[in-house]
Amino acid sequence: ADGNFDYDVLVIGAGPGGYVAAIRAAQLGLKTACAESRETLGGTCLNVGCIPSKAMLHASELYDHAANGAMAKLGIRTTVELDLDTMHGQRRDAVKQLTGGIEFLFKKNKVTWLKGRASFEDAHTVSVGDQKVTAKNVVIATGSSVTPLPGVEIDQKVVVDSTGALELAKVPRHMVVIGGGVIGLELGSVWRRLGAKVTCVEYLDQILPGFDGDIRKEANKVFKKQGIEFRLGTKVSGVAVNGETATLTLEPANGGEATTLDADVVLVSIGRRANTDGLGLDRIGLSPNQRGQIETDHDFRTPVDGVWAIGDVIPGPMLAHKAEDEGIAVAENIAGQHGIVNHDVIPSVVYTWPEVAGVGLTEEQAKEKGEIKVGRFPMMANSRAKTNHEPDGFVKVIADAKSDRVLGVWCIATVAGTMIAQAAQAMEFGATSEDIAYTCHAHPTHSEAIKEAAMAVTGKPIHI
Ligand code: FAD
Ligand code: NAI
Image: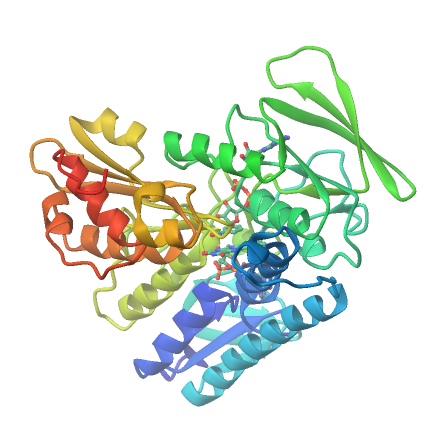
């Protein structure tokens, strides 16, 4: 390290932003430490987010296929019994293995894990627990946590956040999900599949804000068909817990008479907010913006010399892969290289069944910017989806009317999360819809639907 400091780089937070930044910095020859207050590395994503939610989504999906007759239709008869303890056990195992894996990578790359809460003394001095360390560069990667609903206390028994909803010891009779965003739909799906009645209360007039309008409508239709009940344009104005159950007060978002709804589990999933409390930002003269986030420039520099920030704590989508890419870029920038993240091409995936995914502009956003052409292709006409009895969903390719450059791709399909990678790559390479249409796609794959939607941009799909 530079002789004046203990470390070249100190990263605060070991989530996908922070741990990736620390590993890349070490790979680039910088003496690196990472402060993390949790017992395990990996942040929200590995401990209570992406990974445990996917473990429950995968297991509950298989259970659902077995229990609801989908497997029987394929000639697989089963007697189905839910063993929730084992299901939770395999979730914990996945988390343990992956968080342990990051600890191994820290050791392998010689990143020092400083255990404890970090707080700035000055821009180059940080206290972690009861020790003080100095670093030439400090990267704030403290992530985000659940936005509370005013007046509603999360007890993790009757009223839970996503962390509590992953751990429920029994299947609720009636789960009310507050917020029809990503968490509400993923975790609502888990418990619906395992037998709960699920009602989703959403303030806006449609679920999944930020997604393409047609996709939002279609997703709503699909999840409704699966049995999730939606109360759109409705806000929750109160939750009263009485012993083992709760009574919610609901009001139309535009005003009107209040109604009540009883539940035995209430999931609060109305968004997440940046973690900056207790960081001592005032001691370095850094103030968060109105939304509580830390602003940076394109290189992830904050206005304070030597202090950088990445991931959920800065503006942009709160996604693990966005945080990871920023982690790599910030380390490269600290090392004097040119780390860049293209924030226009960050895919978003909802891991329900079918999956909902998109990258780039929505049709609404693209229209505002200029003239566009749109190609669509239904999964019902895709041979693989049809063979697998997965008819729901479609692909939509949005291209600039003049240049034909692809501006956005949206899809609902069982493997939409995997399909969207090719769209992101095509957009990163500046592809036109014609480029995608003339790329040979293996048959029979769901991905052919992207090729056909691209063909539809200029009006010539084959299979519809
Ligand atoms: P975090 O992962 O939040 O990590 C920050 C870390 O910093 C934490 O471990 C925290 O303990 C630590 N920390 C904070 N303050 C201090 C301090 N002062 N001192 C020391 N340590 C500190 N994203 C996806 O892309 N795909 C998904 O499938 C997905 N699923 C999700 C499911 C759920 C239920 C949730 C809640 C989130 C999900 N996300 C998903 C979002 C994803 O988890 C976040 O975008 C990602 O974790 C952000 O990474 P980060 O490194 O910025 O912050
Ligand atoms: P979200 O922002 O996706 O959705 C919150 C929803 O709650 C919005 O639709 C909003 O209109 C609604 N809402 C707000 N206040 C309300 C109220 N009082 N009553 C009723 N509805 C209300 O937030 P969510 O689902 O909590 O997830 C947080 C973040 O975590 C996501 O934005 C995403 O970035 C990340 N995440 C990503 C996942 C993925 O990539 N698959 C999975 C889970 C989370």
